[in-house]
Length: 270
Image 1: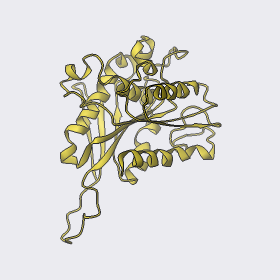
Image 2 (image 1 turned 135 degrees about the vertical axis):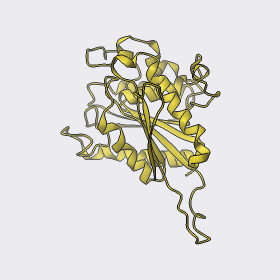
Image 3 (image 1 turned 45 degrees about the vertical axis):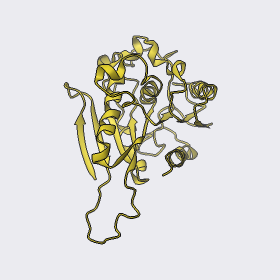
């Protein structure tokens, strides 16, 4: 496995962590005939209200996808006062381009890159998925047209607007009230397919966020899959003892992981 940390900004405050499957060198002539020549990839973004990047929504959450055969990545992006728009959006755009431009070397299918996230990380994923083609984002970063476009999105208990989220514990991108964070308003035909899950008991980010985003996808004929669980509070991550910490986590919510993998496998024909 190729495991490394790649800084994507000169200040070294945003970095990409890689978990890339190794290609074994063996003499047996048939080895590799049953292995994928190029793998799909997934990039996960931890939450934390843009105030910090949650350790339980970063590295632990890429392993199920790695075990399912995906090359996996997670991104630590600018948070706190340095999360002022468009810093985090530029971070994730650069991260996707870093994966895509190295796709040949890493044996990744450049048209099968999913970007997902939890809470604020999901918001960031949704911003890129709905706004990669808007303004001059790619041009000012020196990214070729479409180089930062996700081929799929995964939104885990994600806020798609900043309504009722203004408080002292959140990062600058939310406090400044930028319109771009309201990603539900930017869904269009260029938005990639999306997997969405949420819980009705979530008090920090109401389930209406998931319902509204799904509705906008339906209106714009964007493929989506939506899973709403009745029980469960905000921030469950993988819904395991170690990633949900001491929060009550209903046993059925962890099914989202395999459901998501199944959805990606179908989407990417993998």
